[in-house]
Structure formats: C-alpha cells, structure tokens
Length: 238
Length: 234
Ligand SMILES: Nc1ncnc2c1ncn2[C@@H]1O[C@H](COP(=O)(O)OP(=O)(O)OP(=O)(O)O)[C@@H](O)[C@H]1O
Ligand SMILES: [Mg+2]
Image (cartoon, rainbow over all chains, first blue to last red; front, side, top):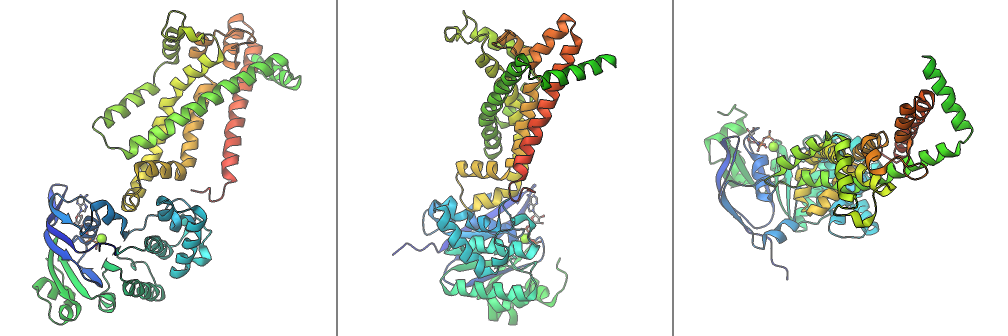
C-alpha cells in the first residue's frame, strides 16, 4: 500500500510580489476525493494559489505539509498551466516528454503518448510541430502531457478557456473519468456552468483571500460570503 | 579598382588550378578553425545554458566578465598563450608553440566567450517560456540544460557560426602562436598578412576572396543541413 499523497495542510500561506500581498494568508486542508473548483474574478489570485500549492511559486510566509516527502509529493502531481507551454518539438514528443524525464524508454514513452493523445483527440496532429497547433489544441496537448504522468493530484488552471463547446464537453468527460479513477482535481474556471457540472466543492477567491470552501450545492443556493453572492449575480466586485 | 579585378582573376586561377600551396593553407585554416569551433561550442553552449538555469550570487558578475572577454583583442590572447606555451612557460615542456594545436588553443580562448554570450541570450528567452513547465515536471538541472540545448539548437547553431566567423578571419593571435611557418602553420589569414607585407596585393586579395567564399559556403552549408530537419521553423 502506497502512502497517500493527501492530505495537504497549508498554514498561513501568503505570497508577496512587487511589494504587495497578492495571496493569503490562507489556511486550508486538501483531502478526500473529488474535484474542487476555484472561482474568482480576474486577478483574485487563482493562478497564484494553484501554483503555490503545486510548488512552482514559493510562498513568502506559511508552510505546506504533504502526507509524504516533498520530493515524492512533486512526482505525484501534475499541472496544466493557464497558457500552455509548448516545447519546440512534435506533438507526440511533447506528450511523451514527462515520461522521458523519468527514464522511460523512448519507444515505450511514444506508445503511451499516442494513447493519451487519442484520449484528448489529438491523434490527427500527432506528427505536427507543437508550435503550429491552434490554441485549443495546445490546451489539449497540455492536458494529455499532464495525464500521462497518471498523477494522484491534478491542478488545472482554466483548462477550457480556449475550447469550443464540443471540446469542452470532451475534456469535462475526461476529467470526470480521471476523477473516478481516484485522481484528486483542483481547477480554476470562469465558467459557472462548468463549475456546476464538475465541482464537488467550490472555493471562492477574492482579492487574494479564500472567502469560502463550500460544497457545490450549498455554494450556488446559499453562498456564505457577500462577495460570492455578488459574484454569482454578475455584479462588479470592489 | 584594377587591383580588385586583378585579385579576383588571380583567385579564380588559383582555385581552378588547384594550386597545392593554396589547398594546403585553406585546409589548415579549416581544420584549425573547425576544431576550435567544435571545442569552443562544447564548452560554450552548455555553459551558456548553465548560466541561464542557475541563479547563483555572482552570476551577473560572471556574465559581465564573459561579455567583456568578447572584446578582448586577439593579439593579447595570442601573447598570453605564447607566454604559457613558450619553452620557459608553465606548459613549455609540451612543445606546442608554433604548431596548429597552439593556434587552436588561441582560437578557443577567443571565441568561447562569444559562443557563451550569444547562446546565453538565446537560451534565456526559451527558459523564460519553459521555466514553469520544467519546474513542474521536476526536471533535474541536467535535464533542464539538455532540453534547452536540444530545443534551442537552431539559435545555438547561430552562436557557433558566429564563433566560426570570428575564428576563420582571425590573424593576430595565430600569427603570434603559430608563427606563419610555411607548410606547418600558415593559414589563409596569415598568408594574406604576409603577401600584403611583401606588396603582393593581387595575391593577398585573391586569398581574401577565397577566405570570404569559404566563410559563406560554411554558413550556407550548415544552414541547409539544419533546414532539411523536420519542424525547422522553430
Ligand atoms: N510577479 C508579480 N508581480 C506583481 N504582481 C503580480 C505578480 N504575479 C501576479 N501578480 C498580481 O497578483 C494578482 C493575482 O494574479 P493571478 O494570476 O493569481 O490572478 P488570477 O486569479 O489567476 O486571474 P485570471 O482570472 O485573470 O487568470 C494579479 O493582480 C496580478 O497582477
Ligand atoms: Mg489565472
């Protein structure tokens, strides 16, 4: 039995950039199963929070404590960035890249990459150069490249921002399947419909403060905070 | 103008006639400079990438020093290598002074800073783009450098070619450490200096044209080779 990755305990984590606090202090425990949806207006700190949890952004105060060692924790999570980074390589090599980093043989890595490309619907462009893909295809590539690691925890930062309706539904289906396989998911979105469809719980972030972490049903029917209420009404937030 | 025509025709005649002396010094020019470029690239490209990936305290200072070294007069480098290799110098026992090896050493010292500096610039942009992904995927320092070199290889080729260009036309340093000895260390540039000194401007110009042609051919050849590669737009 492998030691579970979660819970993650975040205590008083805050991030300062350019002389001001852009996130926190946040105290939070990430546990259980399911999908947490991170909502909040532009600039509220969603990307910063996700990156800090993942560890690519260093907090200025506070601590993050995984249930396993920090090194091990990093290897068991994956991140899909808001603007996907595309390596200057073919689509296939892009998706295979994380495996080659972990010492998987090139032929095997490519085989598995092909399977994951098929899963996100990129089979047709497998041999193209990654940089010539459309915006939506780039996001799918980034998703496949994250999934190929079969992570225990998956962060996604607005993964459907450039996708059409059909592709969005495909991705949502994949995410639900991944969740059913036991992967914990934390993702941000501006799409309230998506939040309803996918979320088990909603985190609401405003001005760097986590205003609520509420089960989905409750969030949409009776949000705990005034800011979340105005956000749901579509009001401009202070 | 007349002199230039004279030089051009003389160059054409030398080439067409496969002049053996010309062949010898051209080949030596190529051998010395290509070897120096390969060695300098093997040092300079990883070093350029390493400087991007590592944030240490004196990084800025090191980069400033390398940029300053780019402007070092070759004659000074030549003098320095001469002193090191001369019979009474620390490496005198190796007997390398006035050999092609000495010329290669001097050229490596001259062009490594250029290759480091240009590759550092190119890799820095790529790193800004790749940073979060490579950190997220837990790539080791070695893997980061390897990925940046692999994916930035076209820009890095430009860095190596800039080094080649500087080395093939260099005369001051290799004159000092090579000595321009006929059939031993004479290369195109030192031969040009010699012919000019003798007042043989036609011959000097002819060699000059061959030197220019050689540089162009090498650049075109390398670019053509790299263009046949798939996905070369990036
Ligand atoms: N390096 C930095 N220096 C200064 N300010 C920063 C820096 N990085 C982020 N910020 C600021 O922090 C705030 C939060 O940024 P973040 O990217 O986390 O927002 P977000 O919720 O993801 O927004 P969006 O919905 O637009 O993606 C923004 O106001 C941003 O300008
Ligand atoms: Mg964001």
